[in-house]
View 1 (cartoon, rainbow, N blue to C red):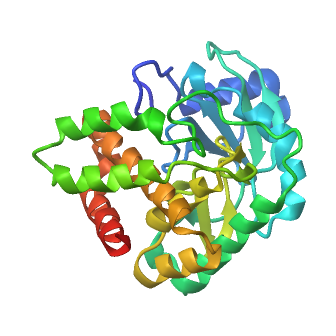
View 2 (view 1 turned 45 degrees about the vertical axis):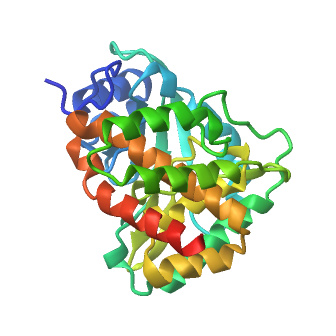
View 3 (view 1 turned 30 degrees about the horizontal axis):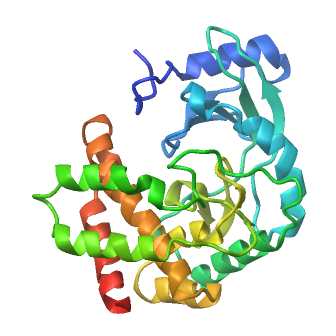
Length: 305
């Protein structure tokens, strides 16, 4: 049985013994080190800690491969401009040991997956993360990757998600005030025109991708959705990482207009709604608290409108 629980129907088997075999075959200098899965691995890749200084990341599916190649090209260019540590790729692994995709070896970054109650000063952290995002937005986008033609690609218009959103809402109509949810969604669609120049975005500022050490931010990881796009994408952090005063501090520090905020809120609303029927049986833990999150989104919408 695979050590790592599968989240997708087309996911390959991944476990610690696979990582050990791949390292022995391709990077013998790192063979024999202890390998253990990282509990906060994401939906696209599975991360293992190898020894004390390394991390190995393996794509779960064919559609999520290619990130290590992107990281090798772009992380060294972005890092000098950013005030927090970001991934440091060390090597590109090839298919082998019955594993069909490329994979990556990275420097291990210290810190624990973000939890609001770990923070010494949530408002200060909100301002610090806003500073990180604004620095990222200022990096030259010449030659930068752009979002794929995919309704789930962050930093893209909301309209391609409309049918998926309404399908999920119909399935969940007994769990929500559908009139209020649709009003919030349609307000975001009405604001869904980004006319400015594309900016670098991280695209996935969620708890598993923001690390904390000693009550303070220590690193931002997983740049799989980093590309030049609508900067509203990184405002998702307002809801995924903050609440109350810290959320307000993040919004103020980002200095964004109401349409940009509405697009970000629509993205979070659609991600949350679509996730409920998808993960309810695959990984119930991933949607724990989602109903409360949506209630906060709707309260935010009501306050703005």
